Image (cartoon, rainbow, N blue to C red; front, side, top):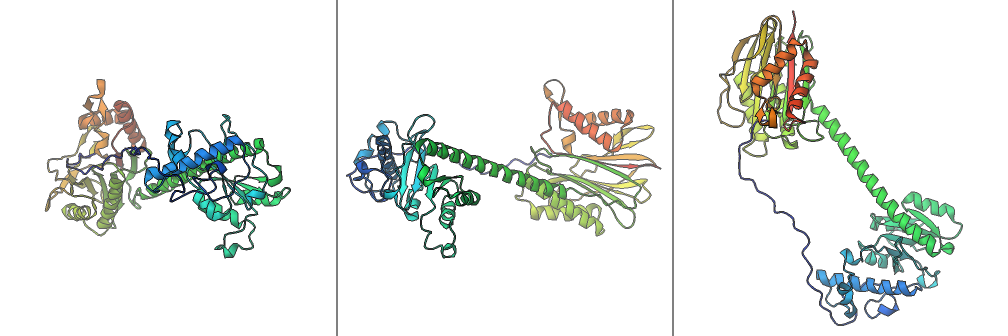
Length: 496
């Protein structure tokens, strides 16, 4: 990878943890400005009033009293409420302070029933550790929305509840109330409560989105506690599976996109053989900042190109694709040499995200007879030429011009090189020569090391795709692991 020019970059401020809330100051007892209804028993009615609650056990009443104090305390902490119940002060002293006002380890159930006063009493509910499950009660959906905070883990919904007035199109839908709850609480577990024996309606509720259903007349503490725990875990599992599925779909979509951006050589009618290897430096990526292409124009000339955008992130990969496509279009339009590279520089200057992005490039145009070629280098390593009877060597690079995007009005001389009757020409990016070698991995492989490696592999009889695969693998092994830079290598072979 060509090293980007250092520059001062804006660094976003690091996010800090949540600011510690100021100690709550107790206020006069009474209603808070944002009071939550249905979250307390009669013992806490002076602090929070509203919903009628089903009969509770002594432990449940005590826990709901703490819940009301927690809720009011949270409002005082975040500045949304003016007054705070007097009994909320002991909350911190007794170690109940926790995120969203929920004591650590406690489960909270929001029960939405048509007539809580006439419904069967909710038995004492305990979690697996023996801690009481907190219960909040709402008489209607409007009340439920006020009580539906982040510390609620599960919703117990009575399917007999009247549908919301605004859902006129669902007036005849028996599950309109459930669908409404699922809309307002997409991340909460939901248990549907239906009449005994109404299995069909319960099963339909699960199909619509509830985690499970229960019969109203068969509730007991053990059954309900277990159902709550099951619903919470199933919802958590469903969300994790959905995120995993979405992640896989995005990865597959990105993979298809990146594969589609890799070039298909246009060499129909040419006797030359083509091979290429590509290894991006980004983890799990298929495309990096390196790019290459090969096309044959109507006059029989074969044009090959390989380039490298500084950096190896997704933005560099996108810019590399733009340059490759621009090169193919310009080449097929008849441009070559200095005129082609000058136009590509204009494309780069208009498409790059900042003025310090540049790209190196090597272009080769091989004559129709295959015996000679024109070479242009824009800050890029020179290709390697291998011919029978003599060792592989680098093509001349004395007239190497500057990388694209560095100098306005730059020129790139075109050098004429002789290839001969039989040859192999390898173009590569600097990721192939910048891997580490030796004891302690302190040295670079470099061009000399790469030439020696390829000479040995040619002597072993490797050619084409097999040679490129062996070269990239050996460079990785010498590096002691995966290369950090993108690597692209292509080879053109001509045999008589």
